[in-house]
Image (cartoon, rainbow, N blue to C red):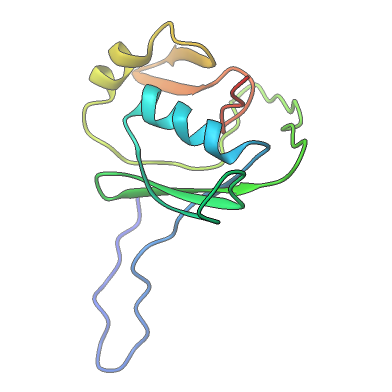
Length: 127
């Protein structure tokens, strides 16, 4: 893990980065994140479905979804795993217990690490 230093004087300060995932149906994907991972909808556009994008929050963590009609994540496999975002957290074992066995969740443990991801993509495709 790298450490960041506080800005000096009038330096530019980056405060956060938000991963943005593509989804073919933003509203249904938001529902999946709410029901399975405890996120809540923080904003979306337009006011009615289908949404062009949505922002979701769980505590200080924000994830955005961007609509792309008929999007299907390519099936790219590597022996060491594949991810689009890395979220540092406490309570990974408690999260594991709440999502184990749910649709689109694949759990894998290697060494002392637990990997949580979608069986079809990093952004779940909800059907």
